[in-house]
Image 1 (tube, rainbow, N blue to C red):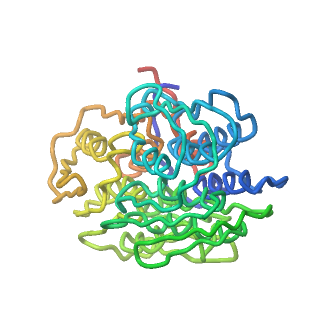
Image 2: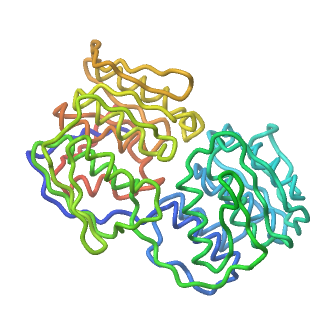
Length: 411
């Protein structure tokens, strides 16, 4: 379907099985491969990002097409640098526009053999695996945490390990910590030497059975649904209270928007609390993937906001800051950006489109963040809804399970 119309139920009482965390899946798959393990991590996601990673690691073809999977591009670039053989790694046209020079330069500084086959600084890449002889590098701390995680994960395969110094402000620190904790679970020795310096010792990974928890990023859309609904109780099994995922902070942040989280054993229950802030400010530097959810939620609840720490949104699947501004204007909400890292809304309104239809820009999170807006608008139309397959393939089915009506329309 090229376009769908979504209408909401009167109230929501449901239990939803979320996809497993693709952040954890993709890290577990890389560590598992570097361990030479016969185990396969359990409860792997069936999303696009994880499927392309599994296929790439199992088949190791001369040309590896990771489609739109940015995580796979970054993690596999580092992995292939220390893996025997020559491979070209490529992706969609949008992927070929996403910069990767910082990671390539860092790997080359360690001794990696990587060539650009198209535009300098962008995929596709030709990578010939070799023994990396250097072990100390420095990176800006405000780059994507996936660059940092990619480098950390290959550290145990380097003869002298890895010493990584981060300069300036460090963004998405929880994702770095997630990587470190998982490396520990797989038998590696890695950690912070100081506030800005990381060390990985040359201690190899061990084959390890591993269970992947559900995805807190995916849970954010159900928090949004609860916040926008007048009456909702939503159970989300498979989530851990003591989670490694940085986006588990969504539970605490949504308390400001009237959602209470009740924790059980490997499950959470979302309920309305009736308490809501009148103005919201938050620094998303550690949870950038939650930004779209909160921007749309606050607009729909008529809660003015000022969000910052959003600089990484410009190099995601699309320029998410520009996309949010464009699509919310269609709904009558003139939000603005500042300094390339802030979005704010003062509560003002503009004339909405007569029949607004949300474009998704090949970005799964645009589709999933805007869909719940139908609860306040009565209905919403989403173009190219298939993009959710990147991280949450059963999102639309889960909405229908919760009572939403989803109808395909002709453009």
